[in-house]
Image (cartoon, rainbow, N blue to C red; front, side):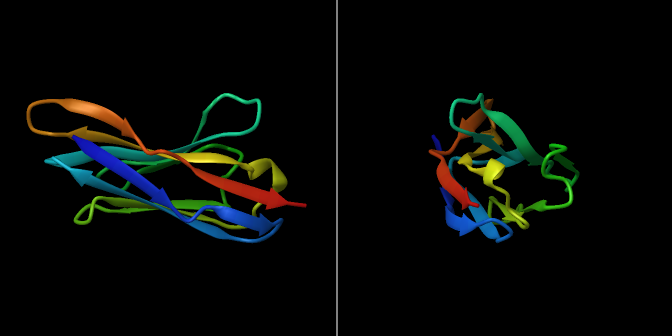
Length: 119
């Protein structure tokens, strides 16, 4: 079993910054892609950013230039640095990891962390 734990959410004023962290633990041989997704009030969950084990990144157009995703493969962690935050970034942010546990590959999700940006 694998657990993902997110941290770092909170309340911030528009233009401010937050840093989200995601730590994976459990039976892990390796982790392929890791990513951050978000679900705003009344909206569907959407991709924010992903990063492969090799460090290739992909961002939603709405966050390009403001958010940066990174990871530490040795520690099985991923980080999302969010700058120039806007009220429309308000959402619950979820970490996702594609985990190789030797015998199978499976996606895991964290419990989510709330980010609220006030205007």
